[in-house]
Structures are given as C-alpha cells and as structure tokens.
Image 1 (tube, rainbow, N blue to C red):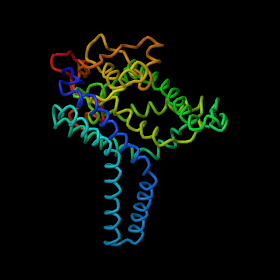
Image 2: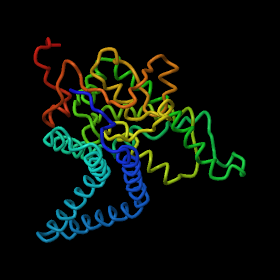
Image 3: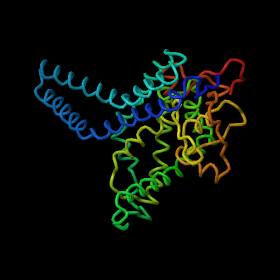
Image 4: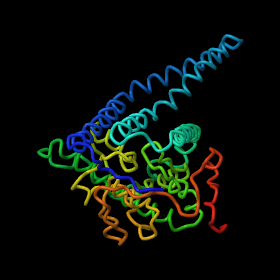
Length: 333
C-alpha cells in the first residue's frame, strides 16, 4: 500500500494535455455508448425472440439454437458494461503506466463480470421490490415545463444538477451508515479493502449498490424531477464513479474545491488513521463541509488505499460472502 503520484516528471505537454485527451476519449466513448442504447435494446429483443423461437421449435436443432442465442445474450450482457472499464484501463496505462499487478487487474475484471451477472439475475425482482420511487410521492415536483422558456437548454442542465445534488445528499448519508453500522460495514469493507485502486479495481458489493438504491428511492419520493435528458450529462454520469477511482491524473483541477474527483475520493479510501471517516460525498464537497467530514486532498498525490486489518478478496466467493482474510499480525474480530 503505497501512495501514487498523479503528476509525474514527464514533459509538461504530457502532464497537462494528455489527461485532457484521455478524459475526452473516455467521455466520447461513454456518450456513444449511451446514444446507442436503443439499438442495443433492439439487439437484446431480437436475441430473446431468437431464443424463444428455438425453444418453441423444440428438438435438438431448436434447443441448440436457443442455447446459442442464450450464449450471445449472456456475452452481450457481460461485455457491454465492461467497455468503459476497458477504455479507462487503456487511458491509465497510457498516462501513468501499467497496473502494479496484472493478476489483480484480471481478478478485478472477473469480479466486475460477476457483478454484471448478479445484477442481470436480480434486476427483474428488484425492479418490483424497489421501484425508482414509492407510489406516495413525490412530495415536491420540479418540472422543466414550469421553468421560463427563455432559459432554453439551461433549464434541463439546471434540473439535472439539482437532481444530482439531491441524490448526492441521499448518497452521503447512506455512505455514512455503511461506515457506522457493523453489518453494513462488513459488505462495504469489500470496496475499502482494495489496495491497488483504479477504475477496474474498484468493485463494490451488490448489497452496497442495493442500499444506495434504497436511498435514491426515498429521495425520489420526497423530490421528483422531470426534465429533458441531455446525452452529454448522461454520458458523464455513466463514467463519474470510475473517475473517482481512476489512478490516472484526470481530475477537476481548481474546481476540486466543489466537485469530487479522484484526489478527493482517494482520501476517503486512505489507510492513514487521520483520514478515516472523511470525504463521504461522491459529487459535491458541500455535504462533507456542512456535516464536518471534509478533508482537503493532496493536489498531486493519491494516498495509499486499503483497510489496516483485512486483505482484499482473493476469490469470487470471498467477494460475494464478504469474508476476507485478516491481515497477518492483526487480532481476530
């Protein structure tokens, strides 16, 4: 667990311009990805029809056809969300060099694929159990149609930022609960145990995501937003979590006093005791500042990450069960 410099001794052009180009590449891929969702869902629909037709026909050829369709469906479901991670990995290697351990990266890739499979299997059930909002809300509704027309494109941008701000409030308190309640920390510590943190190697336990979904659902019950979707904002939101965990020198520069970036979030993952319980927010630093959990990040060094008494998961079962090995020399819980 060693600190990582995010500004190297490379030439000025590489240090200043290359990260911007890397960010641009990631954002472009994310926007293209999000803008193609309709075609992707059309492909999924056609594949499902292909599988159903094979099952209906029966016999060896029919079931073989259905099995082939199922394989295509599964591969598409797994590969689709990993595209962005692959682009992040490429940018990290180009900007700051290869990961400390390719074996760790390969394991992280397997974990990310496992998360996709678990999400795919549980999505229909969770959609009914945890809708985007409860039927009793929202108590307050902010609609783009109610804003002045002269705002133009600024209207959906303002509402998008306001919605992120509100959801960030929910995320902040859910995150604090994950660090406070022992059973929640057991699963959240899977994420914090990661030592060689980067965009790929930043997995979270599915129960962490489930709890955050509950927080968002409750917030959506209080405040509802209705505005035109802007593909650029959607693309940025789809990569934001990875930006928080990338080891590449991609950050918000002076805007980091307001917007959370990797420098800010790595401080939350720091192994140093003085950094524990700091920088919970994932979007705006205002919540940490307001509730006394803010710590100013280092402008050019990402602190070492990990947990002092447990090791990162080494198997998929350790990850799913949140049963990691204790670090040698530490007392048993």
